[in-house]
Image 1 (tube, one colour):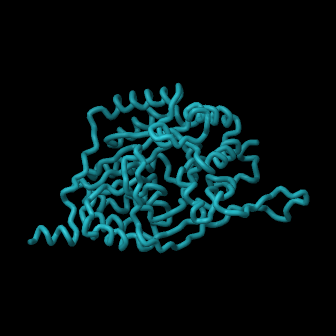
Image 2 (cartoon, rainbow, N blue to C red; image 1 turned 90 degrees about the vertical axis):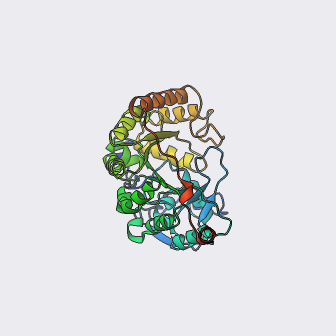
Image 3 (cartoon, rainbow, N blue to C red; image 1 turned 30 degrees about the horizontal axis):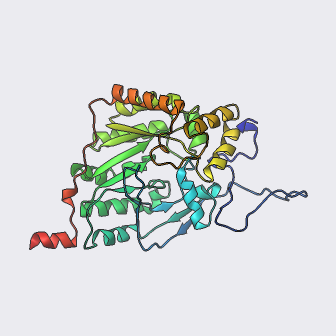
Length: 356
């Protein structure tokens, strides 16, 4: 059935259902002979929930990540990217990784104060902290709440390095703070571009900024002296893999200094969500895409193996790797992201040491 003919397709949402939360004993089902008197699911408005965590910096020991520390001012993400690996984390809060993930957003209002407390620990040593390691720190509600901006103010105050990962042009609101951090070699910005096709973006990432908008972000940040990396992520073989070279060229033309990529992997509940989605959004391509994803991950949709989970393996993964390398050599040759400068860090303890 074509998407336009499918009355159950929720426009403006990535997930088309709520998968079962494995941590919950009970679950809702629709398999009744008598049927239901009203629709089981509806495209309801986004809800927001407050969280009061005791700490804001998360630590990861994953050997194939470029960062060990991260801050997520929000859990859940209204962008609604169907492939998002962070969906599974929503189950820890008692929600579904499906529609709940993009319409039940958890907010950490006290993030900036907690970060200051973290920086002022007596034994703290400066390290790169990512914003965000899980969900986009510039998702729509940030425009109103400004939690990410308050965190950047703390990073600048203490001169601690930060890496931003986003696909939203709201980041330009904070170009004043970001450019100041860049002058001290304290920031890298990573802008995710999944496709240059508006038709694909609207279905794959329904509440995100257009590719043209993200390229404009790269251009404006680069012109302000901010080092920007284009993230071609995730690459979905058979769906957007043919765009790799075009995306890297477009990003390079706008001033990107580097690029990275990951191949999609559909761990946990995301496998069921993505499979349901692609049969509704791209029914004629569904089988081909799913089989090519399996080809990259040892015959499975999911992959948790260190070293291979992000880049995959096999002939399709190898061809993607080669195409990416050729495009980077052609369009980004001679460019580089400057290293972080950890020597600027100052807190109440090392300031006293310097004074006395």
